[in-house]
Image (tube, rainbow, N blue to C red):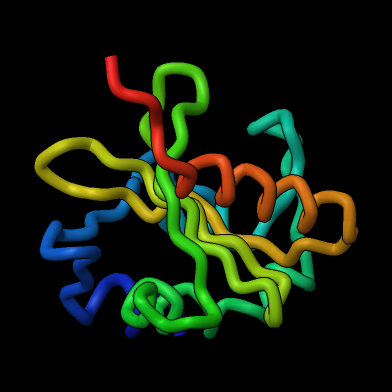
Length: 135
């Protein structure tokens, strides 16, 4: 699935090519795969996450159909990183892309288990969509 969706097919988001973060390889898999299938805050201690693994079919269709009514898309700054969030409330799934200018990295994707996290994402999206004052 991951191989077909991210390595063989030529993905893009809004006309910008997607590339993978391949290094460092983890257990012979690309780093992007590792982020989509493992969880944890400390990189060297991430553990396999079966909820992430069973949802590996989700990222590609969400990226391809990001203009669908069920999908919310917005941009945020996380530290110095420009991130694009693609969220499906009905699937309770979030895809995180990183905008690198000439290309976009699929960074991670995961199931949103808790309703308070869903509410925070929706609130962040609504704030992003709200018109900004001029000046």
